[in-house]
Structure formats: structure tokens, C-alpha cells
Image 1 (cartoon, rainbow, N blue to C red):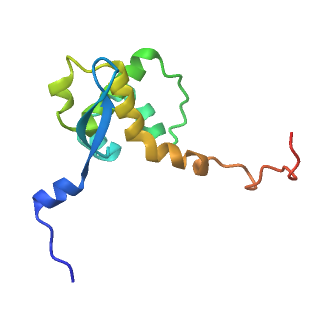
Image 2 (tube, rainbow, N blue to C red):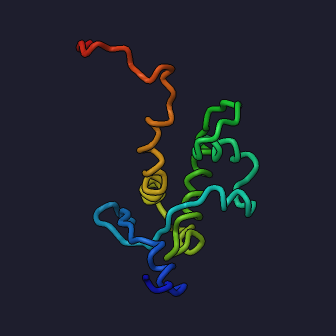
Length: 136
């Protein structure tokens, strides 16, 4: 039987080091991040109402409302994810200095596992692409 982990060990296990572009896009810098929990953020009221539909879509929930994401909303989504995943430094620590490339890198890392599962979420009626092995 294994020993019970203490809180410091649990915190260390729940985070990872992520390389993001430096401020000149010439090299990389390391930050400590954790996987986001959209459900936790939603229950804590950390997702603004106007982003709830987008967050639900990202989480794989169908809200029945389709809406295009504009540039402002995209920026808000990036900020939402940066706040959710950045541990050291926190997003608030870096907010005045963080670049678009850094935010994009953090966002792509945060949704990485979800993106890999996206193909499995799509329903193709009978589960086949109806191709008979012929090249198109």
C-alpha cells in the first residue's frame, strides 16, 4: 500500500513546466502551469456570462446556440485560460507584460488534450466515412 501524499507533493504533481516564447520571440522562458478545470471555474463564477456558451462548447457541452467568436471574445478566452492555468508567475503578475504569442502558446497547451479528443466527439451517423478505400 502506498503512502498518503502531503499537500505539497500533490501541488507539485498537479503542475508542470511549460516553455513559452520570451518577450522578443527569440528564445523561451519557463512558467509553471496546471491543467484547467472549466467546471470548477464555472461553479466559482470565474467565467463571465457572455463567455459561458463558448466555455460550454469548449467543454463539449451542446448549448444549442451557435455563435461566431469575434476577436474580443477570443482575447477574453485566451485571458480566461491564462488565468486558469498559470501558477508561477500568475496571470495577474504578468498581465501587463504578456505577449500575444505567449498567451497563444499557453492557450494551445491548455486545450491540447481536448483538441486531440475532438475527432471522437463528432458523430458521423453510422460511424463510417462510407469510403471504400478509394482515393478521392
